[in-house]
Length: 294
Length: 250
Image (cartoon, rainbow over all chains, first blue to last red; front, top):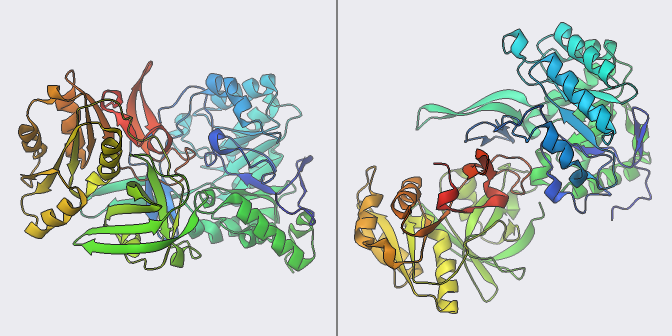
């Protein structure tokens, strides 16, 4: 059990969370949730799409200095199977469903399915996937596209907290557009576009997204800049591998923090325990850290 | 992923290959299972970032060993660990052991999991023959080093060009006299095993895949397999790393 003498609870979009830690989408399988009930504030299952996706052919991952590049390709069973199996993620914590589409209509359909189902407490839009209606650029390619998809999803999810996960590129403008369109919270940031090369084989090894400690300063900067500009809560994400990292993101302005590939190399419980130590040393409750830079 | 601090009892190095023995009092590895390992000395810095998956090479009297190829900085650091390692419990689905006689087919250092398998077969009285291919241009004492690890095995010197595994199967001869072929080796060896075993004998292949989470979360260790609705990507870390040859969509 994580010692709870220190107050770890935070509020996010009106939802009380027992801790400010969340798993980043796609980094915590239902098979390994057992024993995590007191670690996370909410569970974020792997991103789901309208139809099943096979994902990208291997190789899908390559280690880099202080991180890794992945190109999974959003492998998932599609919304029908996702909903059929959703109870596997029910460990008594709120479920934040991560959604991705290739068109605005697909995003809306997914929101409608989630809304009708009712079990997901909140929705997080993964806007890093290619938008086939805009030449394959991602939904994060500019404020207009972000605003369009967020507004459409907002209308499809009346009363349900809507989070929007953004990439680092153009993050301030996109964050403002998402807020204007009705987002209740912003998750910053998704992986950073990256490439690894097999020099001996003279070929691309993995073309995908960089995660891990290498991107932590980038993510911190994004959280810091955006949190000062918006009125909705920000969830920090990117390179968190320690309790100090969690504290840094919250001081920079995050109301909660996601652990992604850091959870592959550290036990999330240890990260939370380190965070508790940070709070004790500071004599603060978790919620008091947010934006607490002097 | 919970990693346990364990004491290194022995290490040796032959060319690009390293063997590490460590004290392990947890659940013993099943043949074909893997463990994650990283150097305890560098773990605080998370450098290298990811732990490395290795097949359990052997396990006896509370001592587990890993046999691996030194390919880069991560495996080099591991090969030099003198005192403590961080290791996971044995993970994944290993070989399914049934009746014999069976053939064990391996390629050089990548035959690592066959050692523990042969120990299990000995223990359960399943008759088995072991064949290990050695590159033709390997130094002679390399074969001697391998022979110490696989007593009773037949070492087949192959060429160092593509298609070399066929020589191994020429040496093995008629596969029909075996009930199962267990293979662990380079991709060419596994692909050839799948091909020559089709319709003749059951085959189980141990796949070496790059892994990140090793618990089914990240879908990084994708393996194309055949399902009821067509091909899909399984996860080597929890669905494998040993797969029936007929399940693989190669």
